[in-house]
Length: 264
Image (tube, helix red, strand yellow):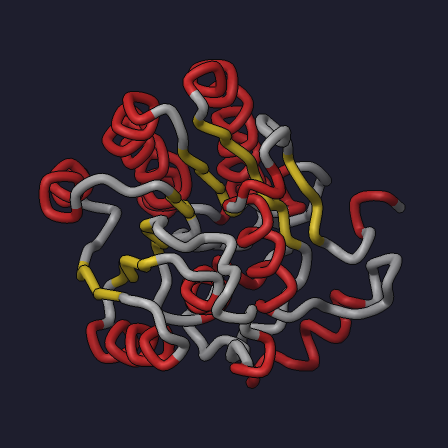
């Protein structure tokens, strides 16, 4: 289970000591859109892309937390802005490209999970999860990928979950959304890679994002090969790598960042 999709808690912060030297910023001149970027893994991703030189559009529902994320990115020396959006609203998703404009990097991080035995998941909850975790990324790619392809370059990074690969009791519906996101990643890679647009999927394991649930994450971490849960920054660094030219020959891949949980 990835806690990234279950919480809006504060993320691990990017240390200014980790900033690259001003002479070389791998994402300088790039513009990134990160969904669900006001807290947790999303905020860590937004800050790390900013640290690496990208201008970052922080998308989320909480304006106060969004402003705080923007301020941290600006402290790192990059431009940032906040856009309020509820991605469960398809009309709002459809309007985002006109509002934001073209981007070079799209990170589909926003989403949520509901856990329970299959008979316990209500139809409305099932539909809401698919709307947030699958439909919203689908139509964001439909809106932003054509511009990337026309310019001949771009990077789309989906945030999946180990639940999309392994069977977890109580996670049938949530796991199905993340498996769908993995399938979309592969299809989009086939559709866009020859136009210079790379599409990849990062599948986290248990990640510390809620201080009040530390004991739960500790327990989940013990199921991994590394015997620990991860930090949001560990996911953010992988996303920043995939967004950069260092990952120029990686597309259509699902990269597990789960402490080896899917390997054992």
